[in-house]
Image (cartoon, rainbow, N blue to C red; front, top):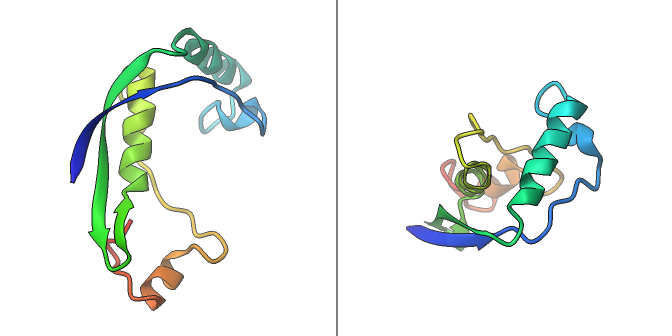
Length: 106
């Protein structure tokens, strides 16, 4: 189901560098402004919605929905247009389906 939640940002870091924060163009100026804005909101609770869904593997987090919800909440406005899963190593769509999962599983 969907839950109302409050989450508090206690730290904001970019361990792989600002180029991964600055949007599709990897703008360092945009990235630095984003990090500066985040620093202003540390230790303040943000209200957001989180979703969990029942699958053949039990109840799991809808990571795509929750990532967008968290990002938009911390930004104070809609900043994420869409979220897509990336197939990485053993955690990919084919392995989920082979293990009995459904295409709609998050």
